[in-house]
Image (cartoon, rainbow, N blue to C red; front, top):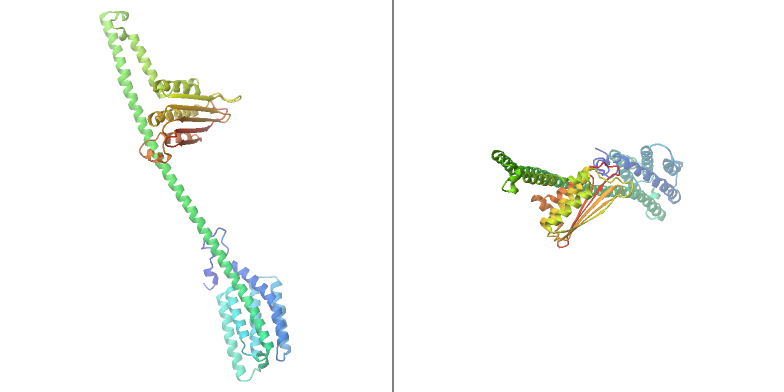
Length: 452
């Protein structure tokens, strides 16, 4: 590709925080800056040429100089394409320099001018145009040199006389102003490249940060899937354990009791002895039936407390906690703030069982692992939410060990958290070695929720 823009960092192949501009869009700003600088430089250059020229001027010299002084500012003010105007400016300036080369001969100022125009063409237009100006310049040197060497052209030697100060002043002024023009354009390009470099660097940093964030999210997602898989395995294992427990209870407890009851009835029927005259009252059918009812009730309560369906969460928890306190000797205090006016007294059944299981699991953990002596349970029901807090004075633990515990199959805390999150709630666990453990749960509870 001939364009300098082939290596432009603002091309669409480079990442950027903004929409990538067209490959040649930056040249528009360069062309505008070049036209503006040339419009300001042309008048003083022409003025110095008029005032400081040593030799005699012809009318053609005056026309060319006046055209330069008027056309370059005009190109800046005229309407139309910046590309066209910048090319016209370069063509006019280059033509004037070649004309002056034919009038005053070899000078450093004209050489600098022609080299400057080729560089400006390369930056603002294309490599082809820059090379074309270099070719035209070389051809002009050869042609003018040939004509001058054969005395076809008459050069004004006074304008190149090194012993005249005005020639130094004119050439110094012209060279300085042309250097300003070239420096301004190149400085603009450098600043543009630097700005694009900073934008690319910032974009890369943002991309790296986004990639790191995605990596972290993927890792968190993998951890979550891993925990979900372990929770599912634990759930299946728990279900199998419950089935095994029910099977054993039915076989060992209910089955044996029913068998004993059947044998007592058969013996009594064969002997013709009324049930009230049996030698061992403890084996009477009524006593066996009472024992059977008691065992069935215990199994039923272990599976799901009937009070939870009959009288609600607070009453069911109060009975459960009192029973646990009697069995274990643990001091358990329950504080429940009843809902205010206009709030449904009962929670939806799924929220009630979720809250009950969280308290149940917390009590179990405190008894098994914390060696707690006291446990405080607090329930707060507002118009739109229910909050639970279970705090023990046990030995606590390091929260950093939760993942390791979950990996080893201890999924009680993970199960509580997932149970709460599945219902859109917020779960918080606070603990430290020697400082006890606090479980806090908040669940949204619409006032119109149906009772369980």
